[in-house]
Image (cartoon, rainbow, N blue to C red; front, side, top):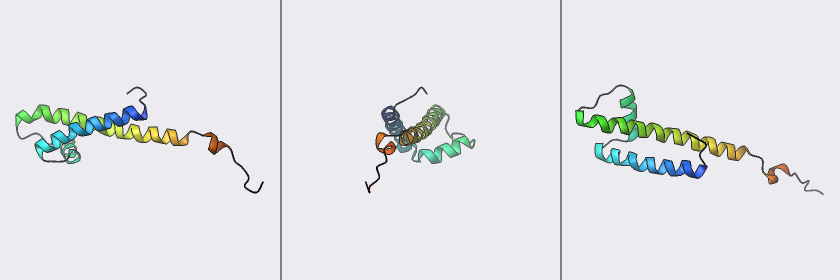
Length: 93
């Protein structure tokens, strides 16, 4: 993932969340629950589900990655010194 802006990351998160919600509605389980079972080796009961499950897992993994990237970008922004943080004024002067 090249350097993405906070806005780009947030846009990705929303698009991915919408995709995840469509799978959650279709299969009746939250993505977090699905992903844990899928990564634990649980196989789809129906062969027709295999393509959906592979895409769903990849989408969820990307969503997790974007969540991490968002938090990291936010930390970088918060750590960047601003002029108001650099200037200290003695209130008694």
